[in-house]
Length: 392
Image 1: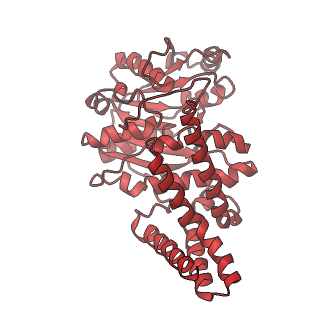
Image 2 (image 1 turned 135 degrees about the horizontal axis):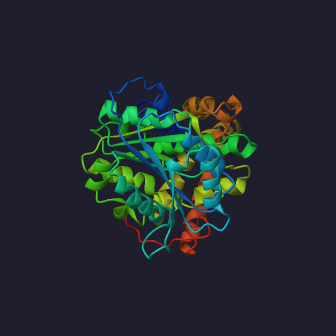
Image 3 (image 1 turned 30 degrees about the vertical axis):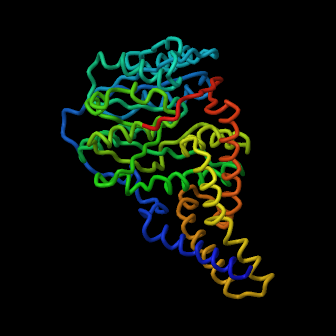
């Protein structure tokens, strides 16, 4: 038994050394939009902002206000797609534009019924893009209705794209991190995403890794046309990464980073809300594969759970080597998690909680698979999507 435990703990330690040294420095938070200092020449590109909104009356006054008041001096128009809301979302939006005397900047698009083979958000965005295309913009900004944009966000996005000749620029907005469960689980959500899609690899045109964050994506109109429009990913539950993959695979240049000042208004103040968010698409990340699910569970156990378990077993077995190896792996894990904890201004104590956090996420992944097998996968905004298994 001692030999088996020692071997597994060594594997865990070697895995963490490999991740820290050779996995795209995923644990760092050095890719941030606000650090961009480039300046672009006038005339500035025209931008059409597309906002799909379904029952967002509680957040639309804040999010739409932040868009209408952007300090971008180029021409931009906002197309809010009312996706059959029942809470007066469109009326609230019009009221915000009227109060700010910005009615000329806002167009409301009423969504048609969801056709077979589309997810609701992508169908709404496609209708918004189609309407906005009448203005022949240089860029489309695809953003969620629950995002409060820094007043300089649009300018920074366009500057980043223009100065570096990028086809797609996306930021993972700062998620809300106020309640206990948010502090416990939200930084880890970003950490795991960065591990899955190291930003340095995403931003490297020589790497095939592609990802984006759906809350805020600026895409050049020519790049969108080149890939065939949003209809090529019409069934994707993870639409943001699918869009980025389509752009990059068609020789497009993409960039993904974090934002400190553009934030999500969506509260995740209970374990259930975060659990549902993760379980909605976790099994999709595994391509609905039972084999990948088993591999993921074994990997999570080996990488995150074994170090603290090894410390305990080492003490109980009186084996100092097992204890030392496990403790070293645990420290490396904590070191890797600490930057995102600091980014979200959480107590460092949460950095030592990663094994517990990983256990929660493992259970969420299992639940995601269970929901898929029960044909309840992809549930969002009152809709349940049962889609094919293709990954774009």
